[in-house]
Structures are given as C-alpha cells and as structure tokens.
Amino acid sequence: MRPRRPGSVAAEKALRLCLLSGFWLPLGACTYLALTPSPPDAVFRISDILLHIFAFAYLTFALTLAYPPRRTVLPGVWMLGYGLLIEVLQSFEPARSAEVKDAIVDLLGIGVGLLLARSLGGWIRSLLLQLLQRLLPGPV
Image (cartoon, rainbow, N blue to C red; front, side):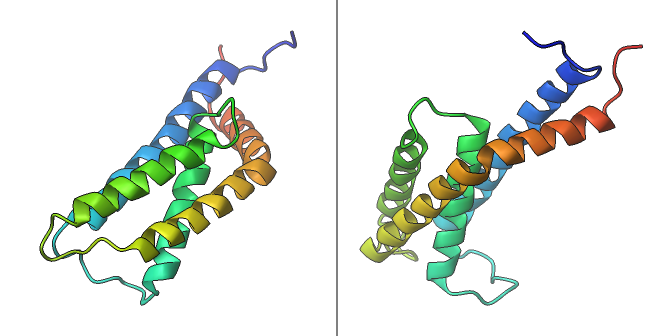
C-alpha cells in the first residue's frame, strides 16, 4: 500500500462529490427538459439528434466516472433504461411524443460515452484528483 499524500483524503472526498454532482445534476436537468410540456428554447440552435447524442454520451461518461462499474457495459444498460423510460413517459404528455428514432440516437450517444469512459475515464479521474490535492489543504 502506498502512502497517501497530504490532503489526499479530503481530495478523494471532494472528487467523489464532484463526480456525483457531475452526473446527478445534469441528469436532473435532462429529465426536466425531457418531461416538461414546453421546454425553454435552446440558446444554441442544435439539431435534436445532436442534443440526444451529446446528452447521452455525457451522462454515460459521467455515470461511469461517478460509479466505476465492475462490468464495462453496465452504465450503458442503465442509461438505455433511462432513455427508454423517458420515451415512455413522454408518450403520456400531450405536448410531447415518444419516438423510436430518439431511442436509437440515445443508444449511439451511450456508445460514444462508453468509448470515452474506457479511453479517457481513468486519466480524467486521476487528473481531477491531482488538481483537488493541490487545491485542498492537507493536515496541519
């Protein structure tokens, strides 16, 4: 077992909080935007397909960082379930509609998120931890 650097415990706790917030807060915002009858107009005009790909790629990547899986595909399964649930719930909202196209595009975004997590996840986690170790004071 290697010795911990000063501030390591605080940095690890802060990292955990950052990673959890980085998943749950955007998930809440996406859920609100997906289920509200009339979401606010987008600041940037981006196609619906790109929004779905970006949202699900980010959420899958963030989920994988916040809850490192034992099986690589597990975050993808969870996010696919979330995407399908959103589509089912949208079918009950008169101003919204459920679309198979959205679920397929969500799956594409999930794949991108899993690839990013696999290739960059460890590096991003390590980089954030190093940054937090430098920012947070160690024991006196």
